Length: 275
Image 1 (cartoon, rainbow, N blue to C red):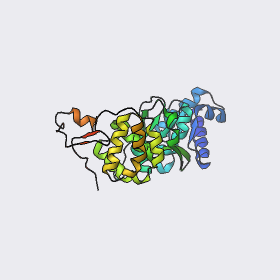
Image 2 (cartoon, rainbow, N blue to C red):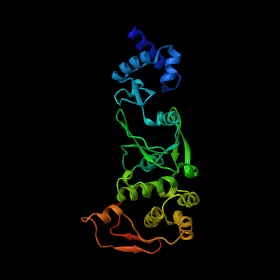
Image 3 (cartoon, rainbow, N blue to C red):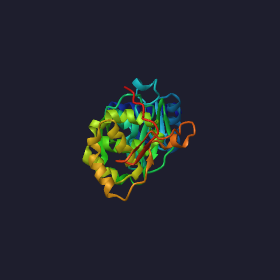
Image 4 (cartoon, rainbow, N blue to C red):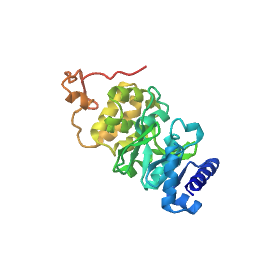
């Protein structure tokens, strides 16, 4: 009987894949197969051990097609939209992953980075690592979220402007100021100046100051002009370090080499940009 249930679930998965679907919920499968929840879980567990099925969140399943068997899972872009819909949360794919998808490809991105309105633990999906970053006010940046087609549908992706702001807002996700500068050197020309100015109202002033300085320094100052006007209209900005982590580290806390009056940014060393 267990073998029959497992075979039935395998057939169900094969039919989904042939129809261009790679995800389903436990409720959907139980209804389609007319089996109990316990019987479904037994069959699903066996298929997971065979690496043909993945469950990144309770009650949510991803079929692993043969071409991704060695990876243990299809790309997260195949199912991130369905997964976040299952969780009932707003989200967008962002940060370094978004920058890569916008053509900033100096370095391979090891994490599939997602910004969402709820705190989630990391998900190991085969060789992929999905990492979540929390943003309480995600609805306020809807202007900077666009729909991107994927092989199985679509997903929400941060625009170049929102991506640039987030790279400075989430330094723990951005692999250091050198990497941020390298990414912005590619991303800068694709930033919408007016959208950047509008979105800058949703983030902390030091984030705007650091991004503005970097865009100027990288030769993309025109993209930051409208944002600078928005910054001036806010209350007076305090001086801020370009890289707070290095400023706090005694091994890297060099005396400042410059103080940029336009953005009120303290620079202790210039970033190193990969060519």
